[in-house]
Image (cartoon, rainbow, N blue to C red; front, side, top):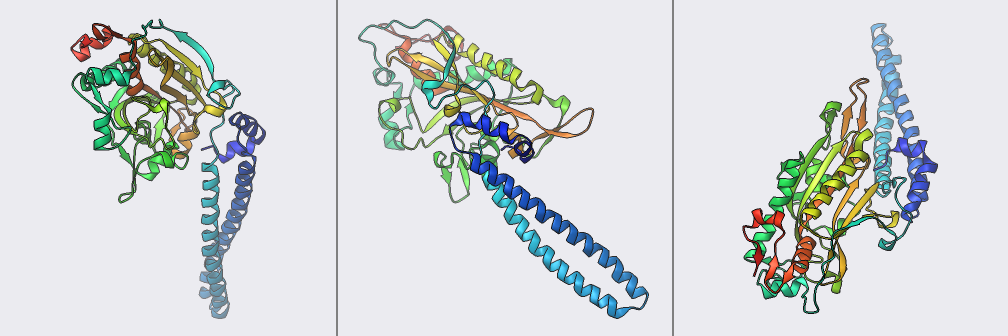
Length: 424
């Protein structure tokens, strides 16, 4: 959430930066400022009322001491009226503050200056591409056929047990899932991330804290009886560990990683692009999260991008890194890099990671601050996160790209975790 101070002091800049998102936010910005003006005026009136009430209380005491009972009673009546007015003003103030919060929750983060102008994924900028493109013959199979051939993933059984988008992993399919998770966690640990095992259900406050609510409410599975949400990513519980926390400047950087299953409704998804592992309602992912000093967050973002790049390189997958344009960027992000790996049998690129800097947007919602060492003033921290990595499309590319007559070859970096070199 953008701070009112930033909006008021930089209205022109805010609108200019938000224009990259191709939405009309001017009305919301104006409404937020207008509501803040009303709130400030009402707060001034309330403060004046409370000051007068305090002065009357002192005056009543003095009048009673002087034996001026009638004057004292008159002032008591005045104090009663002021108290009633103060209660009404408090109710009005609460209503105004609620309206203001609701408007601010609907304003997305302002894109960083380096975010490309564009409306759709077609306008994203390819900043780097690497790896050898696999050369498969005409008999090459897509991963959903390979899964059936080697009996490692059963999509129909998942449909029977739950529904479409909930596959069942079998034998070496289950083992390679576990191997990828352990590999990603081990690499994160080597990079200095502390492993966290968080809950996979969160309350509303956590959803609002990282920006999934109200923006993605329809995409989250909801347990109505308890008012809990199944997490769409480990980013939500892990980042919320620091909700309502004041850090010391020397606490930075805070580096956390977590493996969790993730749940997304993906409403409206259909067709060939969601076949097999391409888009699931339940999937596994290892996430990396950092809380950083504002002066260092973009340096940290580059390091996180390098970490993810190292993972796809070790898995020997051809990949490209995209800087997302304003129209394709998430609601809470200031700058996002997407990683895509090439799926040889499908002949297309598959997104496997997003690495983002949210600057102070999430921190403002979370009330996540730090105390400056010299001035002792509190400031908002910066938060960042990235998939490192999401498993389904990584597995799809590994199966398709490494198929041969002998079977499916496991990348060398993964063999110590699988215990086998081939799926055959």
